[in-house]
Image 1 (cartoon, rainbow, N blue to C red):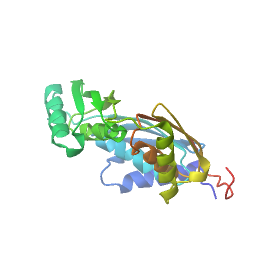
Image 2 (spheres, rainbow, N blue to C red):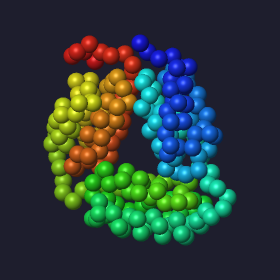
Image 3 (cartoon, helix red, strand yellow):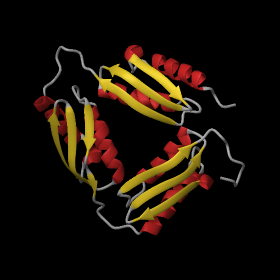
Length: 228
């Protein structure tokens, strides 16, 4: 049975309240046809991301519109120069960020990442590392992906499809994979956000990928086997 918007809203609110990593006291949740809108304020950028993750875990949620803003406590908020130094130091200390050329700038707590990485997944990982710095209000990720070796589009597509077949959460039969010049486009319908996330992750972690376009649609209607 598909949950009503009211039931989805209650479950999202309960999930946010349960998660001790998120101060949900100033978060407002609204739901319209399975689309969840989060608004209000949280005391850190990490908490903002975690609130979105929590909402996506709820059954029948098809999309989350994150309108939460970060409002740090008035006292002891680092300045832009200190934030920049923390981000640069954290990136340099992370083993996964080897073979990358990342530059960071900060203005009014907004971190902009520029430069290049050699694997697509490292672009997202760099953003996650940066967001942990105290004082960060938002991340603008302008990193480009420059693989160290070229991989044919067909080989990338085959690797993504194989990864989907192996993943217990993915619905490979309902996911279309197209690759052009290293850019992977995913389309089709999936029954849950977990299935959607599994498909996107399969593409993100595949060698040779330079970008991922997610055109998947989350629908609570479960297709018959072999029919999408």
